[in-house]
Amino acid sequence: MANIAFIGLGNMGGPMAANLVKAGRKVTAFDLVEASRDQAKADGAGIAESSVAAVKGADVVITMLPAGRHVLTVWNEVVPVMTKGTLIVDCSTIDVESAKQAHALAAKHGMLSVDAPVSGGTGGAKGATLTFMCGGEEKAFAAAKPVLENMGKKIVHCGGAGAGQAAKICNNMILGISMIGVGEAFALAEKLGLSHQALFDVASTSSGQCWALTSYCPVPGPVPTSPANNGYKPGFASALMVKDLTLAQDAAKAAGAATPLGKHAQEIYKAFDAAGHGGVDFSGIIQHVRSLAAK
Image 1 (cartoon, rainbow, N blue to C red):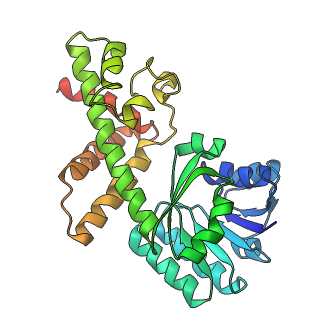
Image 2 (cartoon, one colour; image 1 turned 180 degrees about the vertical axis):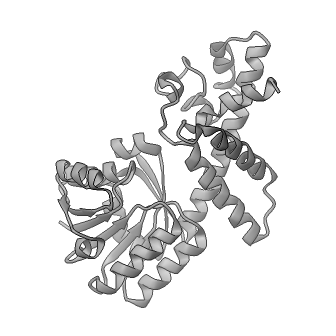
């Protein structure tokens, strides 16, 4: 069984590392935050004193970090001390250019590498039901897939270096746009005297059907597992949606693509975040939509 080093034990990384332990993997973990290290230890992982110490003797290294600069900093620390041929997988959501730089660094030192951002939120991380969108060479993807299957239910090879990040950015732009649309529809229905359940029953079985409606309905009631039933406690926080929509806009600018709805969605979520709601689930954007009617 492969020895796995896991670096980055936050809201997503911590449960992911725990699922590797549950699957019988030997996991050595590291995070800068003491509480995160303590939780990983309680979950059965070994704790290293540093990221460099964590990767010693590892067959697979996984990183789950906030942004591209953090990934490149950690990879520049650990890749040179890893054994040649080791697999390194980044599950962070970062910009495509940083992902490509990370792949180039790994290749320079003779490592296999995969960018594998995830979809599914904290619930998916805890339940091992994440979707992994992977970029990298076929050989690297083949090596990574059995490990990723311990943490997720769908593992997709999207193409070469950076393709996983490209897929994640495009997917979450769709998600951000569609959640605003669903929120606007429910806010309008409220003004028209239509019940939440009536709109859900119609839209969920006709042309308005989408994941934002059927899995994450932004009003209490129709979908019992939706954050709307729990005060919009985040599975995926609005601040993270701002991050992903900003990555999408940066990518669109660099690629020369027009994404007018993506840009408007970014502006709407940035306003929600700036008003102090960054810690609210992104489905809570309906609250912002309602507030606009009063202005």
